Amino acid sequence: DHLEAAGHVCILKNALDFESPSEISNFIKAESLEAAMALHLYRGGRLLPGHGIPFGIIFGGTDLNEDVKQGEKNKVMGKVLEEARFAVAFTESMKETAQRQWVDPVFTREVKAKVKRTPGVRLIREMAREDLHAVVKNCFAVVNSSVSEGMSAAILEAMDLEVPVLARNIPGNAAVVKHEVTGLLFSDPQEFVLLAKRLGGDPALEKQIVANGREYVRMYHSWQVERNTYGHLVRMLEGSSED
Image (cartoon, rainbow, N blue to C red; front, side, top):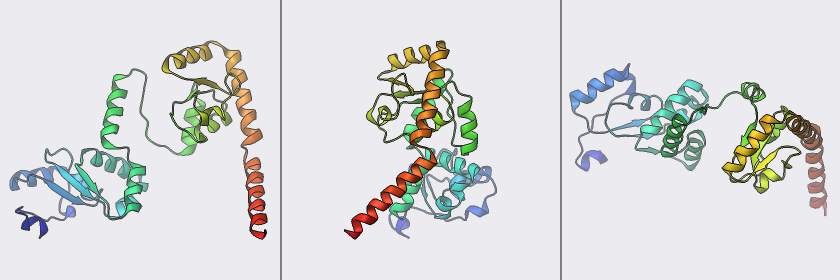
């Protein structure tokens, strides 16, 4: 009623009435539609990309709470958001869930375009932890190029998996990676290239870094150490509350 009061002619359809994108395409042409709006990112949204009309999405709830957990549906919904002109969430919590799941569309397109132009670089979607660890173990090195870090779990995982680490020299990384001891630190792309070549041509350095990194993780970040640290903090808090 609101849209029609503003002068638009609206047609309300159930997404379940359409079995394929081709049926949507025929419907758009038959009705000379100029724009579309879908309620539910997966059920309605998946039918709209590729038809040449602008569209927006209203999150339904189950799309963010349930469908997002299914790999293929998650991938489809991400592609829908890349083409959507806007997305509407009813609550801040829904908005935050969507933002965690899907990189800003413009930035995503820029990254994908850059990857296509760069030989030897592939963009891989998220995967199960066991699969990720298997991939990392087969890598020459793990690179952390973040410009801001707290304590990088990726670096600690690489050390534990006995894979060399090259990390940007920022405070968070430097607190974990000691240059030429538990990994290699670089400050700019040129230094990164030099260190990567050095690591690849110096088996003794690689062996030393891997051994030191593994020892560092097991000494300071094993689950036993973390549990003891957590217990100590709890006891401190309990003592503070008694005082």
